[in-house]
Amino acid sequence: MTALLEAKGLEIHFGGVVAASDVNLQIHEGKNLAIIGPNGAGKTTFLNICTGYLKPSAGQVFFNGKGITRKSPREITRLGVARAFQIPQLFGEHTALENLLIAAAARERRWAPFTRLGQIPERAEMMHLLEMVNCVHVADRPVEELPEGQRKLIDIAVALALKPKLLFMDEPTSGVASSEKFAVLDIVAKALTESKVTSVFVEHDMGIVERFADEVAVWNRGEVLHRGMPDDILSHADVVRDVIGEEI
Amino acid sequence: MTFMSLVPRLAIPLLLIAVALLPFLAPWSKVMLTLALAKGLAVLGIVVLLHAGQVSFGHALFFAVAAYSAAFLGQAFGGGELVSMVLIGVASAVVVGLLVGLFVVRYRYIFFGMLNLAFSMIVFSVLEKFYHYTGGSDGLQVARPLVLGIEMERPAFESLLFYGGLVIAVIVAWAVHRYFDSPIGHMLKTIKTNETRLEYLGVSARRVLLVGYLVSAALCGLGGVLMAVAQGIVTPEYAWWIRSGELVFIAILGGAGSVSGAFVGALVYEVVRTYASAFAGDVWQMILGFFLLGIILYAPRGLIGVYGSFMGRIGSNTASGKEAKRRAMEAAE
Ligand SMILES: Nc1ncnc2c1ncn2[C@@H]1O[C@H](COP(=O)(O)OP(=O)(O)O)[C@@H](O)[C@H]1O
Ligand SMILES: [Mg+2]
Image 1 (tube, chains in turn purple, blue):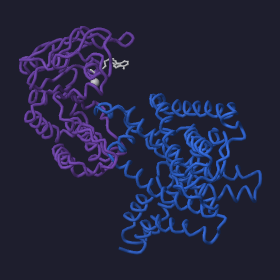
Image 2 (image 1 turned 90 degrees about the horizontal axis):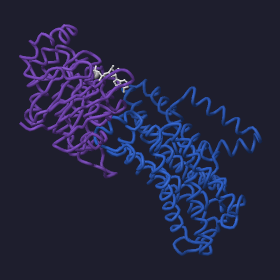
Image 3 (image 1 turned 180 degrees about the vertical axis):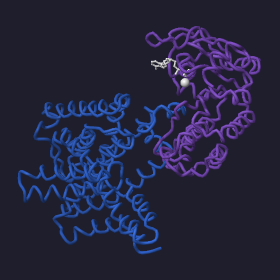
Image 4 (image 1 turned 90 degrees about the vertical axis):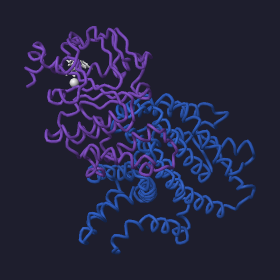
């Protein structure tokens, strides 16, 4: 198995808070890796470092064997890494469909000044993505008017619109109605498998982890404590105490 | 389709026809309207940046750069030629826009606004101090240029400026409208709402803003050249910060972010300014001040917004009231 992304010896702290302490992690191509751990463990920080938003004080990140530690989020995105955020990052004044169309235009580099955003060739593809996350009925609503759950789903769709090789999802199901969680992630997971996208998702719902993760990494206080198969990890005594015990 | 629901769509064509006919009824209005057009073009430049949530307090800089380039060209060739003046003027505004833009697009909000102000003040001083080249505070005369090699009498030239300006304004307004609706135009708007996501789409927010900045510099330049040939003189006052403030003022007055608002605002502003200064002498700025206060407090979407909600209110008596209002707002943009 080759590592699509590899983190080596990452260190970062904010004042006295250690958010990453010797973090080493390989992300294997074609797998879904779940990251679990209590709040403040440094999960989001890890995503921030891997996508270039934060620079670690020590350590390196490699994507496809290439160093990306000092690259900007924009450059890393261009290499094929997309991200859905814990707090959805969308264009509030634009409609759900327009948010996706802008992503598609960015992917295809449609800079010509007289093409209309609403008429780019990727429109049907983007409608399909909206359908996938159950948001077609709000396609023409400004996203700032939509509830958090729908915005999270659209945020995932925006990341998928880039057709990434690697997708980071930060708590994709928090805020999403529990009746919808499984159905939507089922579809997202299917799309990821079909288009051979590797994914890393931070998750608090162990039901979701069991169902969708191929591997699990457990975070605590800026460290990766365990890594392994979901069944093994979730029955591990420490994990039950530190993560599951606290969360559920 | 009811008559009322047609009105919003017809508003802009009707207004255009009214403006185009006005000089026949009142010949003296031609120059005033030409100046309003010139300012409207420059205000459109401000509107472009407002789409990105940025306000420049120094855009008169590009107005002046283009106007002085046209004036230099005219002096160098004993009068010069109008079309080349426009092209050279706009081109110089774009070149200076690139130099300034590469620097200022790294900043946002108050820093962006103030850096633009700083650059415009530098240019203002240069225009004042280098008397031998710029005529200092007296400025430079701009003789009536040839038009494609043809010499024109003053009335004919004024008509040409006005109607030519009107046609150019319509084309430019359409082009800016299309730019706003293009992917890169929508990306410009996302600089205001979520630059982080834009970068996470692999797009350089700075580059997107730079394109908008060049468009806005070109528009201000176009307005500057038109103003220079219409007035027959350029002075450092063209680059003065009060002029920059005036452009922002008109943009807010007309309806921040609205293409047609730029021209409606400029028209109303010129009319109020002309009459208020004729009848109210020293206090006309005060009148304008209260006017702006009223707009900001009671109609933050500007004159175009007032019009939109007015049409909406009339329309709400009909079956498709909401629809009419939405269309009125769309037509207004
Ligand atoms: N940019 C930042 N500045 C200061 N402190 C931060 C920053 N980002 C994260 N932290 C701190 O680092 C710790 C880890 O945060 P985070 O990675 O968001 O945790 P998690 O996503 O696992 O809940 C927290 O204590 C948080 O307050
Ligand atoms: Mg987090």
